[in-house]
Image 1 (cartoon, helix red, strand yellow):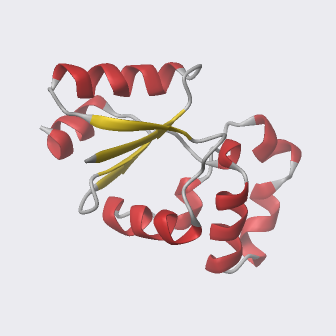
Image 2 (cartoon, rainbow, N blue to C red):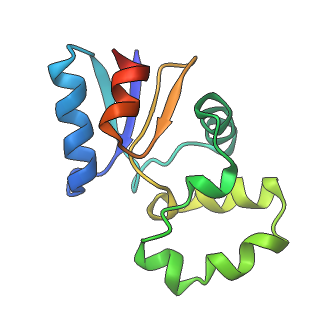
Amino acid sequence: MYKFYGYKKCDTCRKAEQFLQQAGIDYEFIDITENPPTADELAAIAESANVSLSKLFNASGVQYRQLKIKEQLPALSNREILTMLAGNGRLIKRPLITNGKRATVGFDAERFALIWN
């Protein structure tokens, strides 16, 4: 079963959901702001999606800017990054989609077509 970590009020998440629905992919929607992935799940998603941990941050988000994450990142260990993200779903770039083997971070129609079709 696919896990879709998103936020219902997010336009990007709605586009990703529409893509999955049109592709006939069943998924479990998980509100990322209420139930963010654990640190271990985030590490697995980053590895499966082939992205660095810093790419898991929602760099355009209000909290990212308020907490000055960009300035903190160079001094943070991987474990600190994962703990920070797992503790605050609003810091995570969305949507996160995983089937346990593959994963995507954010929404890009071309990438989705390659990964999820």
